[in-house]
Image 1 (cartoon, rainbow, N blue to C red):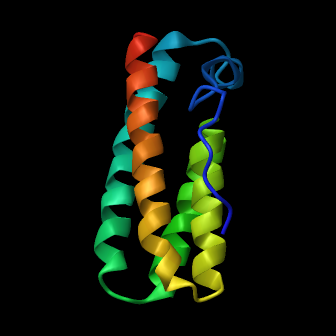
Image 2: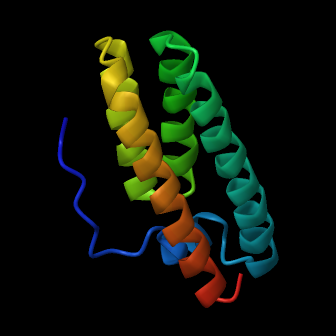
Length: 119
């Protein structure tokens, strides 16, 4: 597994998200609210699945989370979800706890950043 190094970039590219959404600030705010709630729920579900000792449900949810985060321009979250997806596909259940913890830490960083930006 790759070592997780804090990114020099913001946890989400709000400029790219704005462009993707046609510059509509109300839509950006609505999408961010939905995205934040969804990733919180997904990470909580990953924590629960981790106790089940089965790689496939974790892999499937990590795959979905990877796409969701990529679409929302949250690249670092997407990359961590990809690492989790690949680790579970390889049957490396021992990697789950650390990667899920990294996802949650990056989610918290995203929450702080988005709040600082007024969302």
